[in-house]
Length: 80
Image (cartoon, rainbow, N blue to C red; front, side, top):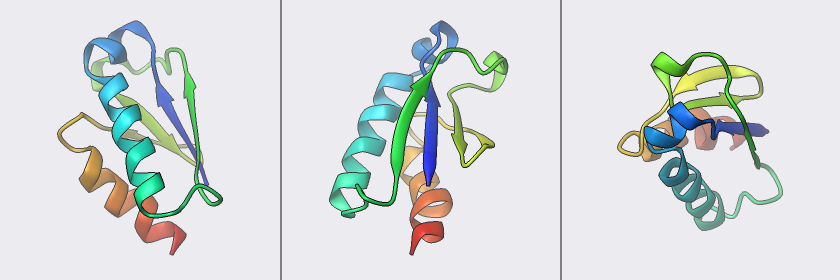
């Protein structure tokens, strides 16, 4: 599974760094390093809805506060 987090300026201001750090920790905690590939990209063109995160090409809007819920629903549930 490929998870791409926008780290462009707008998403950065909305907390993309915290989202990245939380996702890295959650992937490690759940021992999914071999199943989930995390990556970053600059501007996905949807700045109003950032922090933008794609899971296998499907775009989601995530905030530092919703990262854990997003992980449970969109990543953990789909890789198990």
